[in-house]
Length: 307
Image (cartoon, rainbow, N blue to C red):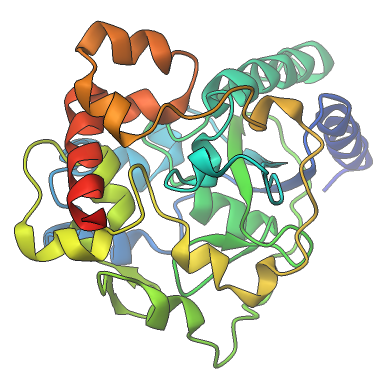
């Protein structure tokens, strides 16, 4: 690694922090180490109805197919942990969706980081925030942004798992950071706490039983035998994060975009809304990922569980 590459790497990291990211790490952009495990996971049916994972599987297994000539992956984190709120209306909603849609917050910052690399090194770059065929967590773990825990979340000793991940693939030759060691040890709090028994084994999640998948990605009816385990949740689930020891001392976010500006309308109100009303009420949030039909379905199950 040349001195110029080291200098460029430090300047890129400094620029990322200037843009407001809480953490930044750099890793290689080669095929991810867990590619074979991902292929086996998909073939086992654990992806459920998320067919897009299989359709672009080969790209996920080789960043060079996504960005020809990619040499490095700049991985960034943005803390969204809001602490305890006085407003209980948001408790049935996963924390990541309490505020503004994170794609709208992280995406423009990655674009500005890409522009910096283009100007500083003539590099081509492409950013992703779980919107393309990129294994963000795998690349981020290899870069040292954290380690992948038994609940398949990326964990960092200072932020726990309450952070969004952004990845900028780039043709720039940057100095890689060292990966972090897995610090989960013998702990299995996340595995034992899952309300629907979604973990097949440590580090292996069967999405078909995961509340986050069922309430967000899955379209159509939810199997009756899984519905009782969804009690208390309308969109996503934070149980495996809530019980994680690494999240006990997580700092509150310094980003006001992730703190809710209004109350969540509640299950009764949502169930009675038409599509246009739901889109209007929840515009600018990640909640619309579930589509209006899914949001109404989730509200109905929530109310049935509360009876």
